[in-house]
Each structure stands twice: as structure tokens, then as C-alpha cells.
Length: 314
Image (cartoon, rainbow, N blue to C red):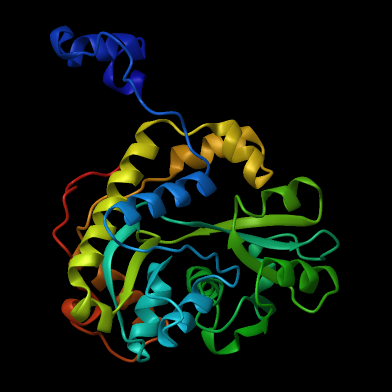
């Protein structure tokens, strides 16, 4: 980049483009970094101060498990994959998207077992894909990958494995041939030789959204707005404080260099804007893959809020 614009160094670029009188003289006085566990507790504490009771729950079955929980009213609010919730709203899920959560795409790794005979992604045509459940991200992205490769979508074969643990088991014993899962989550298993990664399949849209059951939008709209304000403010603060790479690496048992790369690739939205063109793009792709039968209007799928933090992406 520096060569293209004719600058010898990053310092020179800053010197020539940012006036000295508006540069910070001292580093920002930011709070210490938090782990995800500390962040979830922080969110709950802020909610309590606003007379809102919040509890967090991890769903290791991923988006498919969360869409099911929204349908059964086990969950009120979910942070889940964009394509997964849009497809499930088309199938009758009584929820709406209220904002994007992660603006950047999710990079799905295409994995095989260490002893697999397959060497390239093209070798996987007409083989069995491990998915957490039907309607999940791993299921939908298997279709996206097949479409990218030009494979016959009618010849897709799936094995339901429930979660990452199930995917590891199915690849190890040969009950499935390949498995799409977020590449940093599976990195330890690639590093130790359990998996081989043959390629990647990034989502061509923002990867995560916040979805809320529609009945709550009618009965608790003010509380939902408060929660989004709290989440967005906390998200902005945490990202701006330059999260401790070591803390995250230790918590998830990942290499620090992988966390550094992941943080560099990930953009949190931290605002309530929803781009109708992006929602339309996702529907167009799902329609072309025959996952949905038609396109729905923006406001059938989404109910955006005007929250305090607008136009901020970090």
C-alpha cells in the first residue's frame, strides 16, 4: 500500500495526512481489557442498573439451536448467523433482526480428518458434509460452498452432528467426509493434526445479527432499546480498549498469533443500522440456492432501532 501511494513509511503517511495539532499527545486512558466471561457479567451489571434482568447462555449447537430456542420462547434475544435467522424467519420463526452485530464476514474453514483421502476442495464433490443441524450455518454454508464450486445442489449429502464435538467424531470415524466450521475455533485441531483444512468459504455479508422475538418487540420495546444501547456502548468500549490478546488466547486455548489475526479481521457493528441492500443480498443468495421460496420485505424481516451509538464500526 505504501509503495502504491508513494510513501516510504507509515509515519510519513500519518505526518502528511493528519495535522499535528489534532493528534493525541498521550495514549487514551482506557479501562483494562476484559475476557468474554467478564464482558458478559459487565453487560448483566449494566442491565441491572437499568432495571433490566439479563442472563447469557451459550448455545454450542449454534444458530440452528438458537432459532429453535427463539421459536419455543426459551430465548428472548439471540446473537446468531445472518443467513440462518433470515432463512428461519422465512420458515415461520416469529422473530425480527434488530441490528447487525459483527459487520465483517465469517471465515468458514473446510475441514477433513487427518486420514482423509481428499486433498483439495474439488475432491469433495458429491461427498457427505457434516452439519450441526438442518437450517444451521454449517448447513447453509455447505450450500454456498457447493454453489461456489459449481456442484449440483440436488446431490448434497448431509450428516447431522449437533456441534463441533460431533463433527470431530464423525470425521474421525469416517461417518462424514468434510465439515464447515469457523476456522479459528477449529485451529487447535488443525494444529494438532486432527483436522486438515482444505480451504475457506467466507460469508459474502455481515456475519452476525441480533434477533428478538416479535412479541417482545411489541411489549418490551423500550427495554430492548436499552439493552441494545448497553450492548453497543460496551462493545465499543471493549473493542476500543484493545482486548488483551493473551487473555483471549488463554480463555479459548488458542495461539496468540491466531487471536491477533482474528481481531484484525473482525469488525463489530456497535450500532443499530441495518442496510436493506445487505438483507436483499442474503435473500437473493438463499433464493438461488433454493433454501427459501421467495423474497420478503425488509420490514417483514427487520425492525431496526434508533439507538444512542449510530455510525460506529470498530
